[in-house]
Length: 214
Image (cartoon, rainbow, N blue to C red; front, side, top):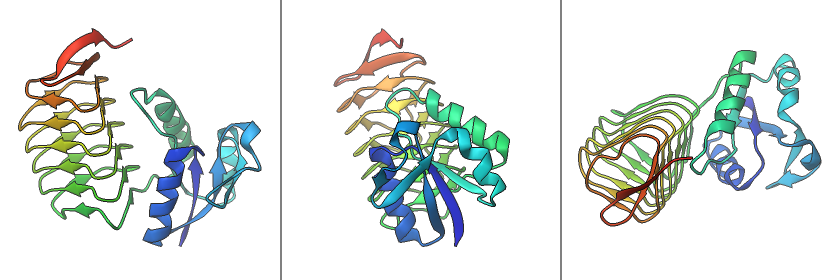
């Protein structure tokens, strides 16, 4: 198994660890987090340093890393860490839980987490470093940009497009061929029946723009 280091030791880290262990492709060396958490453990795996030490672990022969820092509407820290690790030379595998269903006709980038119970159907295109969370359904021909978080229980009909950096809240339903712009938050439980622009917060049934995103 290839050695891998995880970056971020919160709740999202736990579900990623679970999927990695079940996949049996990577051996977790440890977790990097803020300095004050060094010595703590997440599901038995130690926090061994901070992201300032990434390059030293790369030089020790660890070529794979995964960002286990969660994201709710603001992926900026995930983006910053990714760019740092990418510049060093790390590779970013997809972590796909074995209890998900992913069509062989889907096109998935790198560094994505796909949780248990997810269904990704044929013709779907997913970018890089996304979180596709528990029990979400992404139907045929949907397109998902980079650093998108699809929260638990989201249902997306065919041909939906979610652009970069957006967050789709828990339990949201999106009808066919809807487009959601970049850097937008859709609140939990929304029913999206018309296109939503970039850089806004929107929610409700039917989903409506309620403010610009700060």
